[in-house]
Length: 529
Image 1 (cartoon, rainbow, N blue to C red):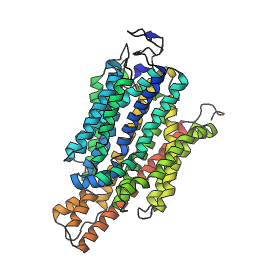
Image 2 (cartoon, helix red, strand yellow):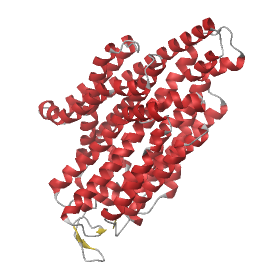
Image 3 (tube, rainbow, N blue to C red):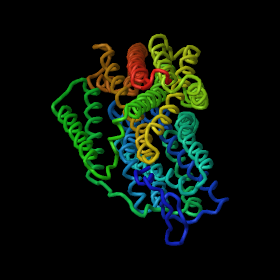
Image 4 (tube, helix red, strand yellow):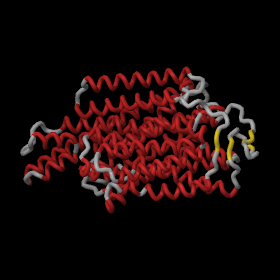
């Protein structure tokens, strides 16, 4: 959602057809019965985008056996989607204001469907990464304009609140059921099917959306800051690339250091440019508010940890616990169910304890669950994981709901569009950075924990074992029974240690975020909660 969607003076305006808009948007008139059909199309689109955020998680082991990506390449495959989505959300919203929201949404689905087909039939790692970038771009085009369409279609305040609630829940539900969907289709048709199922859905939405979604534009769109887009995307890519390369090689070479420094400098230039522009892509002045900036940090930290937990749990259960893709997807259902319950009960907790202590307590509970998982979690004993998943899921659900609400409530009403853009970007950026940072820690721990000498391995085979768990499986296939058992035992132990380190780091980050929430969200007056 772009800044122009929340004008400071929402005076009625007439479009070329004479239709009056309370928000100043130029749009086609919408029949009363048609608006719920519009919501159904938009919610389905967000469900699909949410599923694609996590659907690949359970398919990674089988995909890795076919494509043989390195540890860093695997992380790119998984999180380049959310990083691309986060980078392009705001600029696609601005572009949609200019060319039309309906056109932007339908173009996004065309890109999304085509990229899904390319991803499904990718034969190399590079092809799959490129397809995932295109998927992220298509999702950004879809997500950036859907809220603006809802604001146009639902003119009644109460109906619009319900519509936005359904729209938000659709994305969260998609991300939650993604691993289960991925497990079902991977086990039956292979990993490529997790992308191929998008194609017929995208075609249906294109056909229906072309008929029911009204076109709307902003009569006074903002300037499209192409230089700002280039700075943000390039800078973020440079930092993440350096992080992944350092984790893969366990060294900081000159190319890695240069990439990190250049990326950080470009991000600095992006922030400075946005602060100087009259119409920025992201208005960083909002972060001057203590409550706004703290809520944003809570969302990034929590959603990043939650998506990373979904990803690494599915890998851990399959690679060291021997779970099938379907069984791994089903195993995450307690986490997903608890997350939904946490989101539903978050308003009650806030009314009872206030946002400050509800956020602090839920972040602390999530951190405690991850620490327990790091200390006593056993992928071979599923019963030992259920309690930790229930606590982690519930805490994450509360934080994501109250954090998003705090971001919106901390901004003035006339700046709700800008706040919503930052809120959406925070979720996607958290998902991408969570997998990138924690995945780098897992890769480094896995390589450091492997024994220096393993029997019967050639230098090439040993390099493959160090690259990934799938590499260890491939190397073991060519060994005798005893040597293969030793290699796989060492790989499982190393991966177990890597998962424990990931859970511990995430727990530490969440604990620090809980402390920040308790301190920074303190009331201005003594008697306020």
